[in-house]
Image 1 (cartoon, helix red, strand yellow):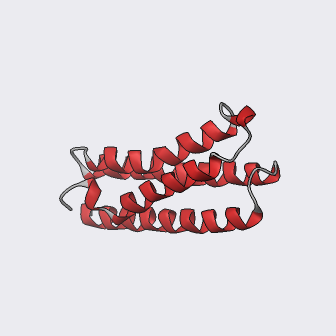
Image 2 (cartoon, rainbow, N blue to C red):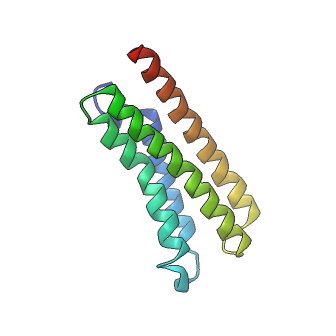
Image 3 (tube, one colour):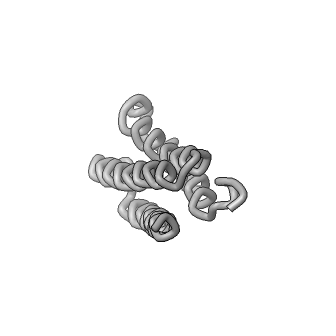
Amino acid sequence: MNTFKDLEVWKKSVDFVTLIYKLTDRFPRAEIYGITNQIRRASVSIPSNIAEGAGRQSHKEFIQFLYIARGSVKEVETQLIIATNLGYLKQSALTETTQGLDEIGKMITGLLSYLKNKNS
């Protein structure tokens, strides 16, 4: 890996953030500081933590930031379920979005496994 920008998981995560911004742009204006802000911040946290971890000095630090990114994946999923329950998101959009999240989560887990094995 030359840089975090070369990581497929980072690229997919950035694309995911773009999707989230487009989806949440349709949420009620009253939610701009509520669930809209929460979902956006949590989604931005995914590629941000991947990038920050990749920029650290050790694999151990990178692994810690990947765990944080993986936690953000679950945070976004929870918030999307809540948004769906509130009627801000259609079930079909939730299904499509969580499929993308699942893929990102699996990629993070794969990278974690790779780094842990490399550290052994």
